[in-house]
Length: 100
Image (cartoon, rainbow, N blue to C red; front, side):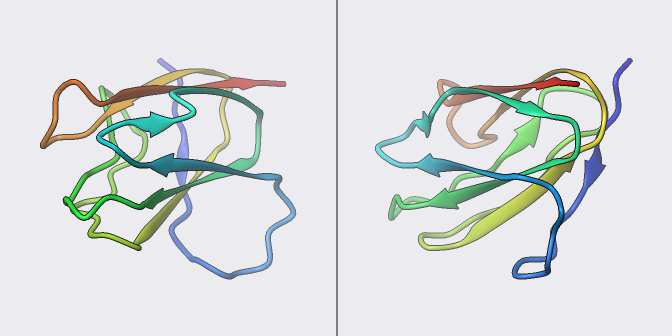
């Protein structure tokens, strides 16, 4: 099973490429992104409603509750497909595809 490494420090200098996912109108946008190994993905909650970014299984993102304006970052260090969801809203799903 693929594993990934968490990186929650915001504002730290990173050599990895950063990709952004917006949480707005009860959706992750984009819902699917493809990144290279070592990429930091940052989610930003623009909704007034709290959301989470939670891996479907295994190791992966686990933001806890994110209120409006909050961000969460996670660095993917392993090739694979990493689906995630919002714990509060089951229709909110997304996937990060990690390639070499």
